[in-house]
Length: 453
Image (cartoon, rainbow, N blue to C red; front, side, top):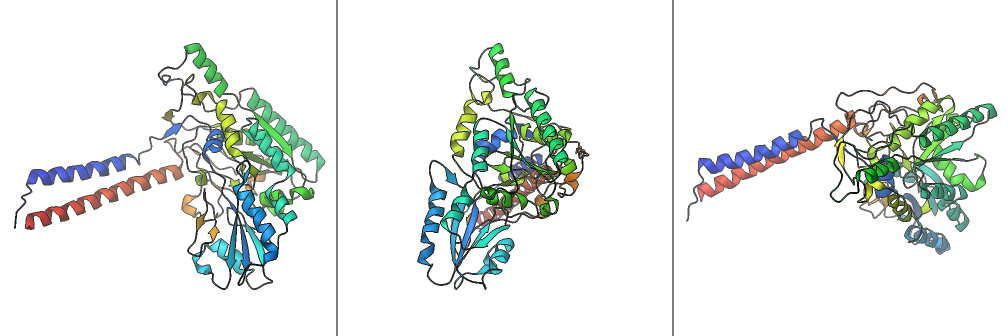
C-alpha cells in the first residue's frame, strides 16, 4: 500500500486557508454597509415580483364541473402575457390533504371551512389573511382580479410617479379636507426637490465612457426629480370591494378606524405601505414616508421591506421598462449602478412609523409571504413562510400608534445600519465561520486518512 506523507507545512497551509474564510465571513458582519444608488421605489419596480393571492378550491372527490369556467378565468388571468394577475388557483381535495403540512395561518383558514358546505373558494392574501370564503362565480372573479381604481393606480405608476398617495376618506369632511391639503403639500415638496432622492454619489467617478461633466450634472439633476400622485377611494364603491377589503386587512386592527381618513402609499408593482390614519396624516409624516421610498436601498429582499402586495392585473414589465428608460443612472451618460456607504439618514420613517435607514422595515404582525409561492408536499401553492419576530423591524408600531400627529424619531444605531440589517450580517458571518470550521474538520479527516494509507 502506498503511503502519502503530509507534512506540517501542508497542514499549516490548510488551516490558514480555513481561517481566512472564517475571517472574511466575520468581516462581513461589521457595520460597514454598502447601499446601491437606486431609490427604493425604482428598485421595487425593477426587481420585486408581486406575491400571489391564493384561491383555494376546497372539495371532496372530483371537482364540480360547474366551477370550471371560474377556474379557467383564474388560470388565464395568472398566465396572461400582456397583463398578468398575481393570483393562483389551488384545488384541494379534502379527502387527501394533510393540513399539518401547511403554514399555520393557511391551515387554520382552510380547516375553518373544511366541515361546511362544499365546494367553496377560500381566498388568502400573500400575508396569510383570509379575504373571502364563498363559491365564486365569473363576475366575482372579474371584480377580484381587476377594478377601475387599480387600473388608475397602474396608470399613475406607469407615468413614472414614485408612489400614489391613496386616500380613503373618513366621515368628518373637515378632517378629510385637512388630509387632502397635507397630501397636496407633500406632493409639492417632492416636486420642488425638498425631499432628497437617492441617485448618484457625486464623490464617485463616472463610468468609463460617460458623458461630459455638464451632461453628468444634467443626469444627476434628472435622477433627483421626484413625482408623486394621489387618488381617492370611496369606502362605499361596490366596484372596489376587493381592493378595500385587501387594504383594510393589511393590519388586524384597521377596522377599528373605519371612520377615520387613511392614506396608503402604493409603489413598485402594486405594493402598499401600511397607512397613516386620522391625526397621523401630517405633512411631516408623509414626507418621511416618501423619503424612505426615495432613499437609497440597501436591502434587496422584498419581504424584508414594509408593506404588502395588492392584487393587480397589470403589465408591470412594460411599466418597469418605461421607468428604466427615464432613469439616467442606468445609462452610459450617467454614473451607472454604484454602491456607496449607507449613512444614517436621520429622516426616513415608514408609514408604520418604523425607523429606517437601510430599507429593512417590516410590519410587526406575523405575516405569511414570499416573492413567489412554494408548493407544499400536497401540491398546494400557499403563501409560504411565516415572518417571525426576529425578522421584524425594531421599531414596528400598530395602526393605533400611527394615528398620532407626532412623527416617530429615527433611532441612531451608530453605524448607519438598522439592527435588523446588522443581525442579517452577523448571521452571514456566523454561517461563514461555521462553514470554515466544517472545512477544517473535513480537511483533518482527509489528512488523517491519507497518513494512514
